Amino acid sequence: MSRSSDPAVSGLELWQWRQEARAAAIAANVPLEELDWLLLSVSDLDQLALRLDSYKGRLQIPLNRPWVQLQEQWHQRIQDRVPVQYLAGVTPWRNFSLGVSPGVLIPRPETEWAIDLAVSSTQCESRPHLDTPLTEGDWADLGTGSGAIALGLAEVLPKVTLHAVDRSEAALAIARENAFNLGYGDRIQFYCGSWFEPLHPFQGLNRLRGIVSNPPYIPTAMLGELEPEVANHEPAIALDGGPDGLDCIRHLIATAPTYLCPGGLLLLEMMAGQAPTVMELLQHQGSYSQIEIFSDLAGIERFARAYRS
Image (tube, rainbow, N blue to C red; front, side):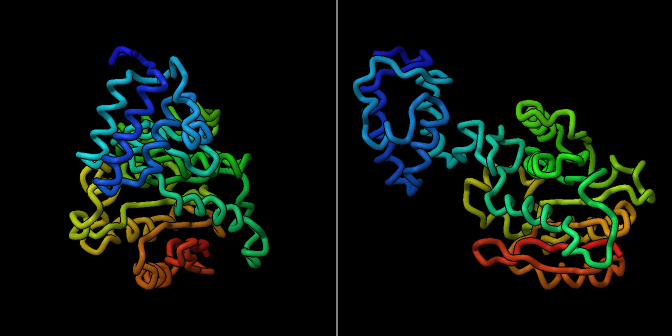
């Protein structure tokens, strides 16, 4: 029998606890796959072992944290609705394993498509009247959080230098660590500040080839209506978009042209129902062309793309 403070547990003890944890998850309407995902992230077990219970006879299963801590964390998931990603300290995103903590928004699967959309947006066929190369030079990820977008762009655009901005020092610490761990520390420069403020030396130089952002876009009045995992645990600073959810998007649309090169790309994520207003904002600003809205895999109008005229 393992001691509660040991970073290991016997297979039988883990099996017994897993049965109890599964029952608690069902009662609390927490997806069962979250329990197994947490176990996979803290041990050397694989999905087949969990499915077949083949670990049951092992004398010892190493863990990356004390056994008692793992039990307490699952209690937090059930009772306090703490997101399982924060408990594990990591989350999968594209082909990365990103470190996350309560100081950063948990990267969503739908945001992954921003990277593919950004890459396709650099192709000549999508920019028939623009000859500025977008696959080199400087790009910005504004509101970088865990660094997910900057890292995704660094992977698929190897000749680009990324400038990642966030107003949260806690978020930037996580983003820097992710960049270092994934081998992109020399490709991404990090800045603490609000939106374009740290990039002020670039203003008026038409230097940025692309700007990508997943800004806060939830209307303030809706924050309390979000599921408790989000409303009670994810940073409000990364969610609250003002009265109609568009305060940050308005600022980005209004300010980006003074930083983008001619033909430079602006790509913004938004929530369901905001596309018509975002399209109108881009059109009325007067500095953009080829404005388009793109839906995610669920059919929700999720991204606005425009090029600087």
